[in-house]
Image 1 (cartoon, rainbow, N blue to C red):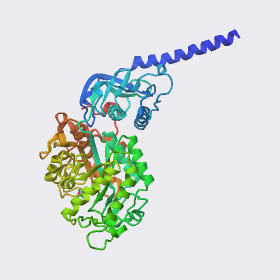
Image 2: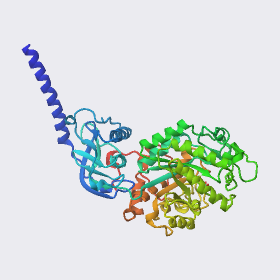
Image 3: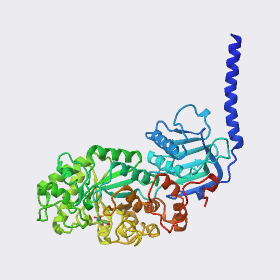
Image 4: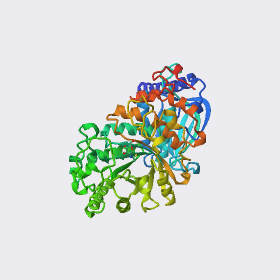
Length: 538
Ligand code: TNX
């Protein structure tokens, strides 16, 4: 009896000794080389960074704890653990087990501090002992997690201890976005991109703190979203794409899957049904919709501007009501995009009548209307939003109506424009947009549009010339990375020379994600595999 007691006492002491020895060992040997948080390759660049030269050890002793009462925070912790696993192969527990047994803890806290009152604001306090991520909202916590992902060293330092240690430089980051709308658009109509492709694009956008993905779901060449009350839209209208391939479409379950995946990344999906022009695929499916006087046929070309709905038929508006109702019901975000661009064969009066009537339908289904800048020629509500792509005049009309504007000037922000004359894909009707041109402009002050009217920035990727994810990535990356900084970081903190270095250092991440980015010769791309000593610190 006595001997068992002594045995178990000795055993417990042994465990304590073992644990404290592990802890001791770690504390004793972790002599980090000097770090500089302010020189880390964060994109978009945070508002304020104060470096403290030390290192936080991310290793097999680390753990994540989150506010358990604040909705969504635990999921954000789980997301971080998943991404740490992908980068380091470490299994970091989330909210499991007592904190005393852990060292090097990452806390993700909900905080009501006034400093963090801006939506999506967050702060990071990194010391040698802990990382504290504070945010008012779950969106803020999620954005902060992206920053954290970016400052975990690319390689482990295997000289600090007899186990691998990833370094997070110590210091403080205070951050919030300048624009509330930070989006990209994907044209899935000219060429169809499947759910997996869209999810990968979402992964990449989320890493750079985008919060909107606009899906251009319909056009002359294809209708890509199942509408249960009008099944031929996808049966017929979904069967083609540019160049004659088979097309495709999202079932409602697919679409809901995309919306849910985006929501997990705190990205809002904006669905677009482009009308009254760009409607050939719909009119082939249901010819009563057609208003251009011709018999519609499936179309696989690239030229646009020939199609229109019949804007004076009530049945057309009943159809639109069904389409908007079904899509709105699956879309938790506040917006519905009605297109409205390049309706060259719709008479001006008919166009205006159409936009005003469709605006009411969108509002009836609880959504805020967005349209390409032409919609501002109609008498629409100040709550509707104009997306500026080509006409400054239309943008001015929107300003006069007190509307908000999304900045997507084709000459600067179109991801489908070629980089230069040698580009493998893309068009150049608006401009050639090399990586520097894409970055060096000021959406805050562009063609006289007042800052107070600007909701944010969106970079559209039209898909006439791209038909698979590699080609998509070639056009979107690296330019989409620069647009994230234009929409998040205030202009006084942006600088091409400094950005260029941070962009060059995105290569390891892009390579790890298997992104086929365009290796612009303007950028001194860093290689993807480093030993710790080799990691570029500039
Ligand atoms: C113009 S931008 C369009 C699209 C094309 C794009 C190609 C806009 C509202 N309309 O239909 O795909 O150019 O760059």
